[in-house]
Length: 251
Image (tube, rainbow, N blue to C red; front, side):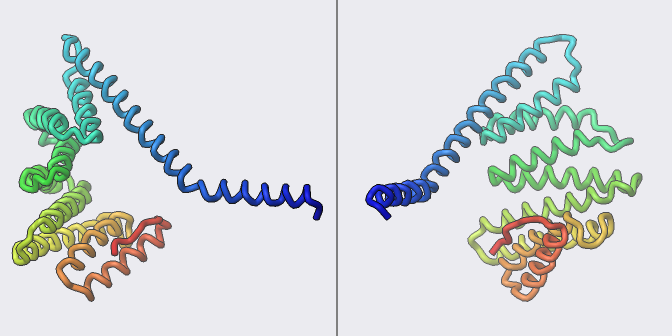
């Protein structure tokens, strides 16, 4: 190899090394740009929906149901921004208005979703009691509806799963072991009920059963039930594999 080729080879190696060595830095820059763009886009969307909501409120011909939908959308955007005070204020207002005209003859999906979102926001700010009250309200409603319409039974599975998860999260915040275990036992009971209903309504080894199994695994693990936790984990992993779902299993 001549001097010129040798120099070119060295330059080529250095060029490749620089490209490879700076990949993590360049990836971090791109990720930061993406995150900044995400927040900018979110702020822009919040601004647009805020303006639309105000305009609809000021318009006497606005359909009240459309206004409620817009108010709820704005509450969800505030939630996404982690602006919890504004999110709670709006979703509480929406939930109350939907509750005032709750239809008990047919399933009111909008009422249920508003209550679930209210529960979710309270859960995110660790207001466990308020979160459970909202989740239990949906459970009570669903139980009453299932008595008339058995086809809604899968909604009960969702409700028991939600309650089981929030009870587990509440338990994790208790320092006293006896308080922690008491709540985790309640959580396990709710999750077992959810599993029973998922299998009844969705069949064995459904995606929904898999999700609840992971929740139950966490409870059993943290209660020190090693054998039960391992069996639950293996079952959940088996369902994930069959459904080709790529998920990172909890430790």
